[in-house]
Image 1 (cartoon, rainbow, N blue to C red):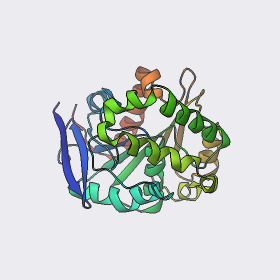
Image 2 (cartoon, helix red, strand yellow; image 1 turned 90 degrees about the horizontal axis):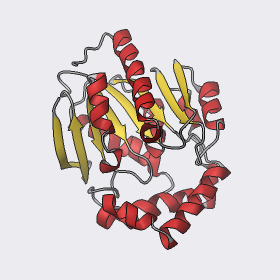
Image 3 (cartoon, helix red, strand yellow; image 1 turned 90 degrees about the vertical axis):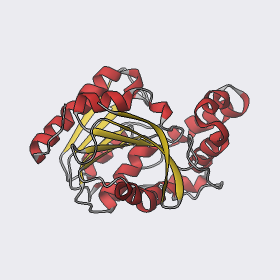
Image 4 (tube, helix red, strand yellow; image 1 turned 45 degrees about the vertical axis):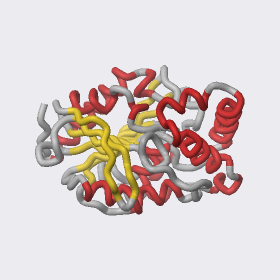
Length: 270
């Protein structure tokens, strides 16, 4: 299995940090892995490499603008930042790496971006979607947790912990996310409509103790999705199942990908 060191590529006029694990796009389907609202390439730790190893797929992991070693962005971010990522950046990323068969996988904000793209652009290259701790609408619980995060960032140790990953982008990463979710207008944010238009199988992984959302998010997917939907509730996890129950989460995703590849007749190398 190949693993490429983090690199920077100009995509849609923006320098984006990325890594690649496993086979290239010519040899197997590619999982495009998208991070949370405070994440980046490095914060996935060994999950992308393990995902490539167990699924046989290539795994392309990238840091959005304003995160990790990618280019910074101007603040405040527009409240449409997840839609902007889905419609203005992700298509160019897929084209840049000449991806032929794609499984979108995202965590938190990254999962929301995946859902927006899969439902908003009928892209024949998208063969499946993996949503880890997704948001389909805002909830007061999320707002409360975001308020606590802001307090910890400004008076606690959260900034120093995040700075190890984001360096000079740390304020950009934190406030770009936090200001949006604490904006009163963001209580109206809702992407449920996109769920109705996803036409490929979806796996939704949810931590039973998620401090950023309730099971209403899961109920929404069950109500709105017409596509095949599998839901896995991780009883011992909060917002980060891939860290808190890594073996179980990896097994669920690997099983889903295996069934997806068998159904699609797509080959993956081991």
